[in-house]
Length: 158
Ligand code: ADP
Image (cartoon, rainbow, N blue to C red; front, side, top):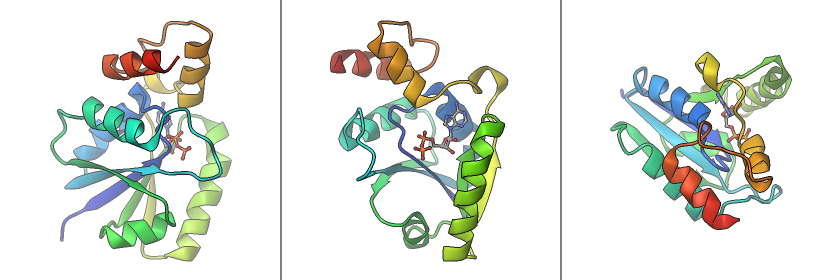
């Protein structure tokens, strides 16, 4: 059986922190699905198509990944895709409480799917999509936080 993990998130936009995690996860699993949420409650900066394109371009050198979007329950989508593992990133202690709650809820919803946490390389631990958007809106340099293709896309949105 193929070992497949899903890395779900808003990816609004995908950052070097996400990409670091995906590169390392791609060595542990046969396939990693980047599951981009079409979150109805949270309004996004980039459209779902832009977020899919940004992730696909940024990850074009990784063979065993697939970029998909979903708007159902994560555990249902994971089941549909034959996924055994939900992958989440932990940057700091502040991420822990929310992630712990989320993984507990998902375990109740489907006990067969495990949540696995990974930490990024140190230089990516402070990057968040929301801070990238904020720095961008204030005219700051985002080039160390996102790939060139994402920087270019974000600048066209201003
Ligand atoms: P969400 O809106 O679901 O939190 P995000 O796109 O912000 O989606 O993040 C998806 C996952 O990636 C989350 O588990 C988040 O903690 C993790 N993550 C975000 N930024 C980084 C980073 N710089 N390094 C490692 N993990 C990260």
